[in-house]
Image (cartoon, rainbow, N blue to C red; front, side):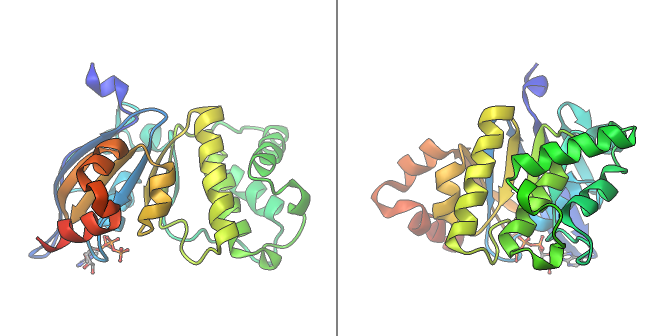
Length: 247
Ligand SMILES: Nc1ncnc2c1ncn2[C@@H]1O[C@H](COP(=O)(O)OP(=O)(O)OP(=O)(O)O)[C@@H](O)[C@H]1O
């Protein structure tokens, strides 16, 4: 029964590269409508786990389920439930934002006709507040606009879970605020869950209801934001995080 209640379930996942263990027996779950922060120092294995969740690489052992579907057993069905921006989204710079999305919409099995693709592209452009700039070339976009276009791309297939790897990297405070508001809007209005890796603890604290903390590929702590705030106490999350990393 528990399984059905999780939008993302990672069970005992391990990944090695040669003799190095990059991810060690990681287990956790993200519930529908939750925004989960994924934190750990540089090289902890965050991108490696995200690449396994999105099916880019295979775990050596363990299971990953998205909305109840095993990523290894039925990769296409599992991934149809997830929109992911793993590395900074790459768009054709001389094509418009709308043109890029129309192109990418062809990859989605749920958008069969050109009319369906056009309609969905306009919807997602509106959601990320880019309708007014949709006809401009991507090379004229700010980094924040490119990130929002990346989220628009992730939304094309109407996912239940969106995975963002370091989404705030390089964004200015306004870009970070716009991204935060967009994430919260998608959670509240569409019930989309998020799994977000970031080093910006203060920013994550504003949007996350759950945290997964790893170090050297292994779990250090996981729980709700409220639990973490309680444990950290007057030290605050940052100080407590540093303590977790150095003990
Ligand atoms: N194929 C590979 N072979 C050997 N080592 C690898 C391989 N892929 C990643 N690594 C190493 O595994 C470790 C974890 O990398 P990963 O990119 O997952 O960390 P991260 O937590 O995302 O770090 P950051 O916060 O810097 O983005 C790093 O030390 C990296 O150099």
